[in-house]
Length: 286
Length: 256
Image (cartoon, rainbow over all chains, first blue to last red; front, side, top):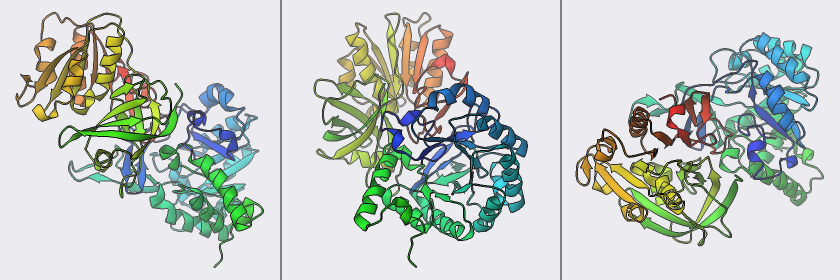
């Protein structure tokens, strides 16, 4: 799959490859109301990674349902909507709108965005708040409910178990790590928001560790992500316990990277005697 | 316009001075059409600290030879690595990206560039000349060293220059040049690219004199094709991506 906020609505990549080879596309973070996002600059390159502070820029779920959904609903892959909000009420109302869209088979509940002032990550950093938002959305959302966790916590396995108990069908992780960058020449922050979310290969070891920890704690499928740049990275996440993976930042550098990983996974299985890719899940030998 | 990702071959690396090089890149087959004002995203290989591609304006295009030129100012690690590319090296591009300059409705056209911002103006000048216009260029720099590729511009039209230290051309910024100081400007359309402070002054001049003005922004980008939403410009319609809604904007559309 492709990670939310790194693949637009899939349309941006059509010139580069046929996205029907993908397991799914997570469309941009969608909120109840239109959001302009944060001021420029919202991006800074860091060693083996980047910081972003986009701040969930999107036109709101009603615009999505009326104008974007008709364009993307017949794509030959699973089009999933990443849902975010500032209040539980926002999450519920947004999920209700998406629930009515026949060709959207699931949502990814984003309780982990580090770039918004209210809500977002705050919901995902404590068990009671994570449970309350997942339970509330579960009441109104009838299809596949994936919940995206924040790595900015002390014990991610505990949050994952709580979210599973609240009714999540799958768990995706990790969202970006809270970070910052300063320009020593100007003595100013490189992001308008001072802090932002770190992604890219720099976060991969952290992500891999968290996927492995969560895999010990829950029974629902795990969707692993964090710095996946190639097939080998993807395999590592599956060995750690991810049933599926999302590719994010790598899409910016090689827009064809996901197609290459799909083919690469198949080749790895053939070379190493695995009948199917799912045989890799949790197959790390200790 | 359809986007591509291809390996180009470096066929020339012309060093202009300590700061600037012009790379000539050859397409492996028939190069697709590219418009003046568009840019490419260059993959920077072998940089220990570089990660993202670098957005670089298309400086010139030779359709017959299937080559394009990139004017690169070595500012950071990524552009310094690009400056070290040798003949025969591979340069992977995502291209052509962004929108492009429109053709003017009236004949008197001025292209105003500062620093590395002169890059897209050469290709635009060629495009204008091919369409029967007689472009004038106004190119500014800190000093003589920063005024580059002048001969290439002179082949396309009259070239005016300014330098901050007065080492060549009119002393001062582009706005101080007589071509922009006349009471009744003999210009119908301006195209500008360069430092934001320069473009803002040029845009203000254009607005005050009822001259249509297109500016080309150089915002930092991650993807270059509308997926990351990092390179936004503040417009009358809110945040717009410099990479897909721009890099060329009508100056009055920007909240400057």
